[in-house]
Image (cartoon, rainbow, N blue to C red; front, top):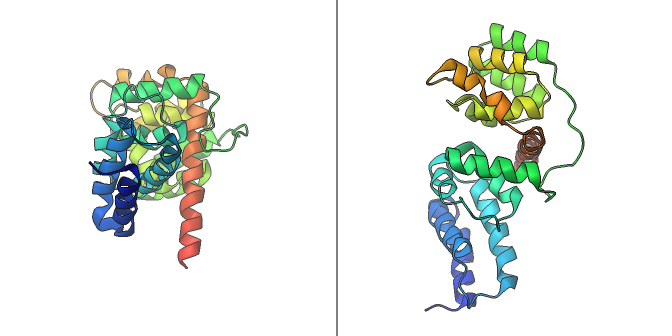
Length: 227
């Protein structure tokens, strides 16, 4: 049985091997955090969490989805980490994440300012007139989120993620419905999808939207550092 120090050294070695071992690293980090061994000191939890958060942001959708399915009932994980998985989480885990954001005063990694309302008319016009690729670029810039995140939001067949973004950006129900009908990839009953707007708590929507905006800023900083 490896000691806590040996286990941490092994994880750091995996991290040093880069993308080739990223899925393995995410799996081992999550195994450790979700079933914390009694012989591991609590002081080790913070660096493990930091390493997992950094690695998850660099992981592919399949790796993130596998871990997201395991998050149910793990309220001990930081909200800023849990929010990383909202877009790839199963429905039951999404509801837990929304509830935590609605009820918790915990820092989610975003700024705590009041989000200004988006220009609904311009967004709906762009959705009507622009191609999907052009729309994700223009709307992403207007909403302050990365186009890749907006593409994932629009690909959510339940329209719940789009409802979160619209409420977080203070777009009304009519604007959400227009965007959902014009650009979201729907599945199932249209009316059921449009009702998603009413199931999303306002505070949770604002917190998740701030989180997505923080992700955009983080990627922009990384791109500048690479130049």
